[in-house]
Length: 176
Image 1 (cartoon, rainbow, N blue to C red):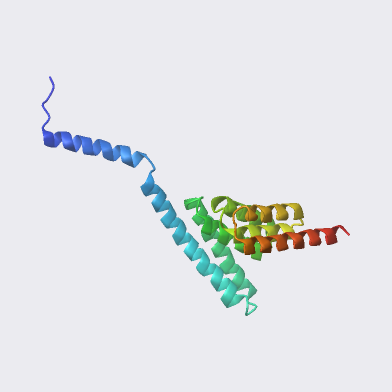
Image 2: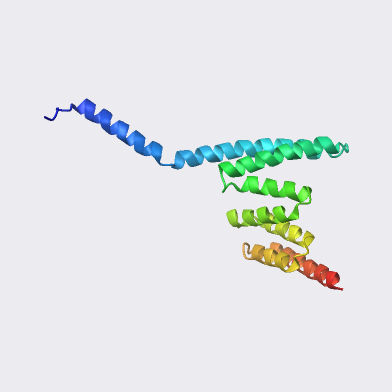
């Protein structure tokens, strides 16, 4: 025999069911929480990076600078793990890799930033600089060409053309 359910009991059952449904779906709340955590890790990473770069490096305190860079590295990676689509963490980790002369990883991360934020022209230029370090001149020119597709500003286009010419000249010099 079925028991009669009151309106109040029915509302409680519906509310509990909906709660379970919403908790089982990673939605906007989960994304916002991930972004918030990513921002926190990124901020801590920047604090470590700045401490190493501005406080220790100028004083030739290499061990302390490296300790801070190592901590920054962990924080930037944690930020990316919390939100793989957070461009600031990728950009900052790329800068750290560049500083440490890990150009392969810097290139990968700058490329990722250009995918996440196609309008960030500085990241295309930084990607080109890293690719030049790796002697991958054609890819550097391609990165600068991709930057040109993101703007219609004549001054910026002219500057990018100047960069492309310089890369080509450097490439020609390397071949000689």
